[in-house]
Image 1 (cartoon, rainbow, N blue to C red):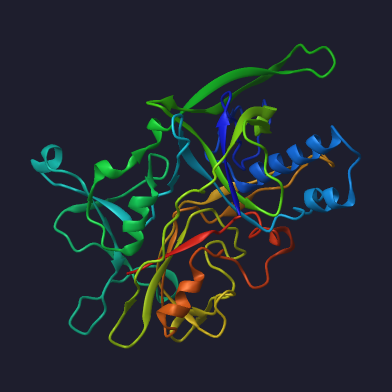
Image 2 (cartoon, one colour):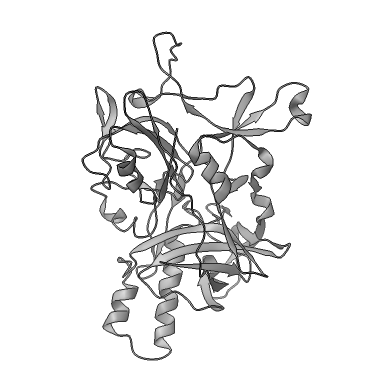
Length: 400
């Protein structure tokens, strides 16, 4: 398993999944970090171009690179994650979307400015004969999430803040009680810039009337001896050499690659809680988006008299009961087929930061096998068969 860091030479443009055509829709936004489809395609294209400079393509190379409908020999992919690299030491630190159960406690009244804003994790509401019943429209008999505190909680936004591996580790353990200052503002890592232009006619290259457009670019920060970029984990293909160049994203902007010999730090599995009935409680955090046929629900979960129950494909023989869910906003994942010059269409993926709360009779030493695996379906749709190879649905376990 190898890690590389991609440093931007210029601003980056990674379109979201929304259709865009100058004149029909004048504004296009960018995703940062981009989806795995963008980065793995750039890495495979780099391998192909480098091979063509020397010898004719071999069968081994063709197998590694694949084709427009096959990802080749990629066996595992992680990220891309927003990251920053030290210019002096080469150390790379990854940043993640805040878990959706991580909330900010906003002080009330006169303490709004002076008192520190704290971060805590919401948990499924306790149930019992002496506890109040909460009526809601949550499907499948799922429990509501609550915070037992006297101040008003506010959910964090992944568009505004990110968390490093240390804060994420505390959040997954479930006993977090940190100052909001431990969060990392996205504005400190990269800036969003807008550019305007006109669509050009194919023949004359003159501007086409009524086809003004505006695009949003991501400008990675370079300050304090740190450089913002993308960290990518990949196995099964040859990664670019140190100080190699890669074309990435819209308009094929350049990036410089750096090897990360020691990799990036990812969360460790926590200590799981076992309740009075001998059930293991754990939560599953999505570090990358995930495409599911049921929208936010994997197809191995079925509605029963006990609620939503099913077996994770990577933990057969141990039914999991979905207790609650904290769902992140959906991410539009699109793409473009270079051969046919057609759009791949757009999938509404379950957003990174989603947290699913489970309980199971499986012992903790069995549950821990799910840490670092991919949330997937037992029978994925044909267009999503390679999703786990591309890193969609990378998940880490937490405790509640």
